[in-house]
Image 1 (cartoon, rainbow, N blue to C red):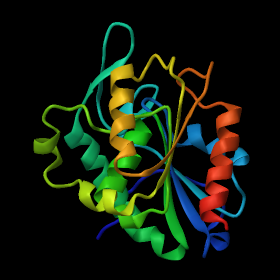
Image 2 (image 1 turned 180 degrees about the horizontal axis):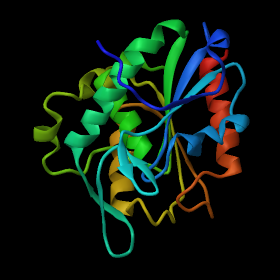
Image 3 (image 1 turned 180 degrees about the vertical axis):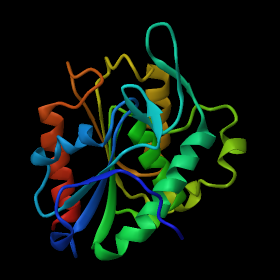
Image 4 (image 1 turned 120 degrees about the horizontal axis):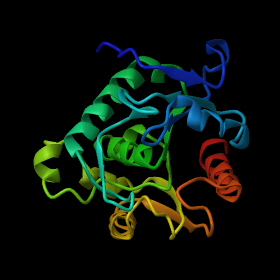
Length: 223
């Protein structure tokens, strides 16, 4: 399998990565790999972090798949097929690097959470944990079954129930409340869910949430 030419920011030089847990950082819509790389100083040491740039240009940054927004700026539609195409690109890249690491986990913000959970749904045994911040799961597309083309293995995911951290603000004005409710119900049936609500955070990541993510990663990856 040929590894795609993705732009990746690494938290450590190659000589220092072997045998460490790997956490892949997946940014949100219109950002780039440096967005989540800025969070690494707040995350546990002893882990290698790889922040990957999404493949599609979306000024001022990049996106994993197209989103449709309403007049208020809330995301109301998405392409499951395009999201799966980005997942396949990430799996091809991971195939070329994962052998040097003790384990692989995923951390996605906003749209990046949709990609992270889609990868988990495809290969639930490949990832130790998933962290999702102010994001959602691809559960709201009417033609999701047709678009997914057998990509999702939700039965295997529900059988394994891996740990997943999901933090959000109920006042998030980007992810619609209905989609957040659907995401919550979907996750409860398929993963070991740690769900935390943060007031005053909006569509972002707070210092308090980063402390909780630090504790979650430390508990599952470094003990």
